[in-house]
Length: 89
Image 1 (tube, rainbow, N blue to C red):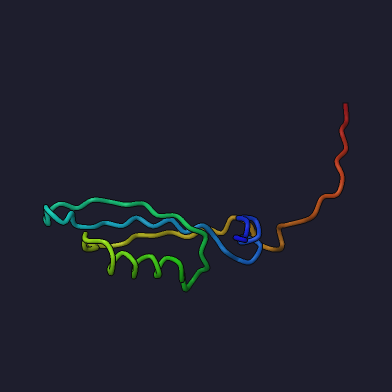
Image 2 (image 1 turned 30 degrees about the vertical axis):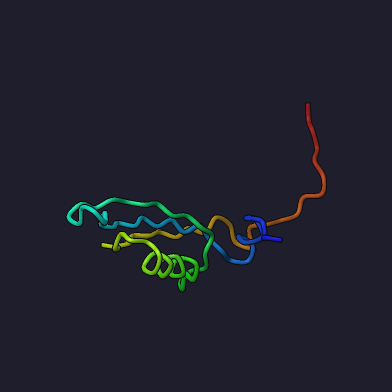
């Protein structure tokens, strides 16, 4: 069973967004872009590099460049379990 996004964030994962610039196979002088997002671990970014390897082996359009950013949404210290809720009128 895959882990939820919250479970991943509590384990230190953050949202990685990458913009791939690649040459269109039939028009090699034309660049196109592709946006990819996944929860990944910084600074090694294993999922991003796995996707880059997949692209290079399976996709016809050769990569020109990749630009990416990484953002941790929450850290383990920011999470707290709330067991009740009070409503004040």
